[in-house]
Length: 328
Ligand SMILES: Cc1cc2nc3c(=O)[nH]c(=O)nc-3n(C[C@H](O)[C@H](O)[C@H](O)COP(=O)(O)OP(=O)(O)OC[C@H]3O[C@@H](n4cnc5c(N)ncnc54)[C@H](O)[C@@H]3O)c2cc1C
Image (cartoon, rainbow, N blue to C red; front, side):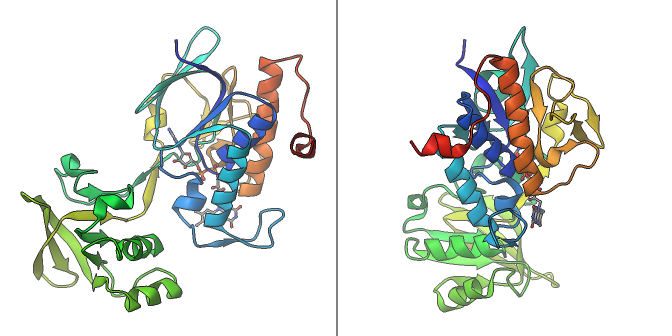
């Protein structure tokens, strides 16, 4: 038998992270499972550079910083955060649930769904037959920088994180090239200026038309946008940074049968789904008056966690204020 959790939270966006913190405050044995290698959900994956002005207590905070603060807060209480794992099935057992991910299996008394619009995955190259090169010569997630030491690297993408990756590897790699399909980069002005001052070789407007494995490294065909001109290039490794897409397809394959409304989990005012000890919060739920905001998600987490704790441990002392936990 695998280790038994009180609460397994599926999704490490703002809803899941804050619920994970609150569950830790209620001393529930809790884990969060997140498909991306980073926590923060949409905030970190879709708009890390945007300022957010409608989260209580912050007159304005950069999205990436909010994601970092949330993760830090959650880790304070000992909630485990498992990154890079996608929940592929949930099976009901007699009085607990069996959760299968693409890498592990867990048992849990209760489940809190915080899946937003579905599991995020990196947007991949539109070239077939490259799976065997992933994490060897083609990367969609950044591993440790040592992987790129003294090598010729091509980075593909036009946003801030593609520029960040190129600049970060500049002192380590033998050469860095950055390819983007538009003439202009979407990144922040300051970042683009750093790029112009760097030794990164910028190739615009080109898109990757073909990739082939070579004995050493890979051959990459670049196509100039608006023309038929092809440029043959060779690199040791390719890092693709085309952003993320989210999909609810995996959820459709789960064995448990959850009621949905407008393709969201239907919950009552206690965040309870139609199944015992399965609750849902955040962007992925529907109820009358639902608002898809971070502030709303922050309120839904504690409601769900308190219900779960009442069900699992009826005699246990109820909610406490955080000051009584952290200031002794
Ligand atoms: C461009 C943009 C700007 C926004 N600006 C604001 C703003 O200013 N203020 C505001 O309040 N809100 C804003 N929002 C909305 C806000 O980001 C969302 O309300 C919030 O992210 C919802 O949090 P969540 O945790 O419910 O879902 P998400 O942030 O979507 O996180 C869900 C997480 O669950 C993971 N997941 C899903 N399925 C699985 C699975 N099977 N296994 C493992 N992991 C899984 C996903 O990978 C994802 O990381 C904005 C949204 C966008 C797109």
